Length: 244
Image 1 (cartoon, rainbow, N blue to C red):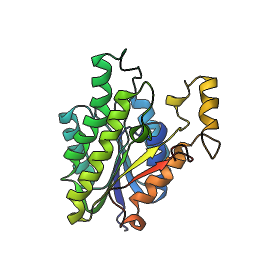
Image 2: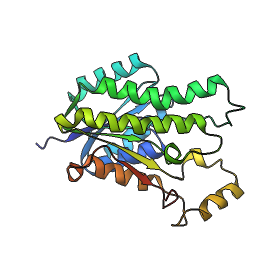
Image 3: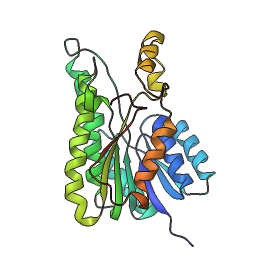
Image 4: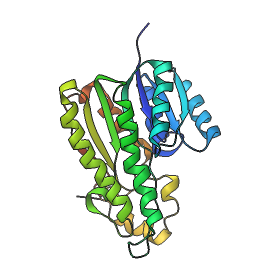
């Protein structure tokens, strides 16, 4: 029987994370879905992924807590033994200009987006096989900044520095480490953008449309594949040309 690769995708019960998990499953990869809040949503995602003919489990863990990430890895070790692909996708927003931002808002976003990436990756290192893949979801905001998002931009820029440094450290094990920087993607998170603001954003995107979660998932699946074995330390934008 063919040995399928195993992927852990954080924040994968919905949105971009679920699309990534589905795309990896279509590429014959067993998937571990990490979620924090909605168990029924996670179970639904597991059922959808299993229909694609792979194994899938959901593991609850708050990635901002180091010990919960360690416990999650132990669950994965018991079920699958190791990981081939890690996708750091889970993230959070709490937008305000710096003048109006509270310390709690700053800490909340940095704790999930940046500390969370460290907590998951650090605990996963012993499980990731040589020739593995680590892919973290950054943002074009981490490259170009955005009004009212100093906390989010700082956290996503931090992921870029983390990615480039880790790529140098893990090269000897032939583990590639890359970041994906989505632009304006149609998700629950962006549905609240006011109509006029959305029209302005669309006018600034050369391809003239918002991205889909599948646009991001397709790139992640490529970076996770054997075809991307000589790409590491890169940040690739999926933004319809918004940032160039």
